[in-house]
Image (cartoon, rainbow, N blue to C red; front, side):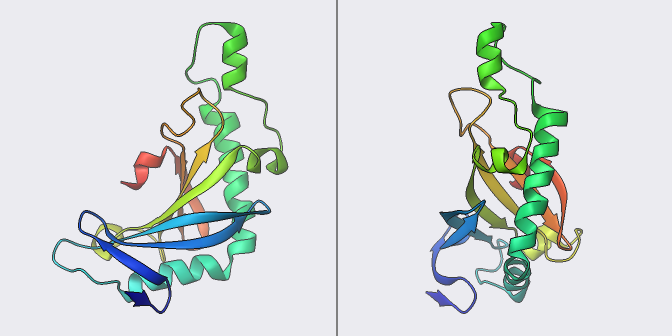
Length: 166
C-alpha cells in the first residue's frame, strides 16, 4: 500500500504499518524502519500519525542536535557505569569516554521510529513519537536494549532504554 506521507507501507498484524525511509543522522545516511502503530479496533494510518512524522521531518536538522545532546547527557549523567563487569579494564571498554556530539554520533545508530496509536499517545504533548537507536557501549551485545528518545512538541522530553517505546 502507498501512503502520501510514509510512501510504501506494509501491514503487520501485530504492530500496524511498517515503512522504511533513508534518513541522515550525524552525517550518515541510515535506513530506518518506521512503525506506525494502530489501535486494535482500527487498521489505518491516521492524520495523527502523519502529523507526528511530518513535524519531525520539518525540523529534522535541528532535532538531530537536540537528540544528540540529550543522549550525551543521558549517557554521561545516567547510564555510564551504572552496570557492568567487575574487571576494571573490561569495565572501561564497556563505558568509553564520550564528551562531544561528534563522538556520540559515531557510537549510536538510528534504528527505528515508533509512532504509537493516537489512543496510547493522547495524554502526551503534540506530535509525540519515539526514536530508537542501537549503540556501541555497554557490552558485546550492542543491540540489547539501545537508547530511545521521546519527542513531544518538537522537544526531547525523555531518554531511556528502547523498551520505553513499547
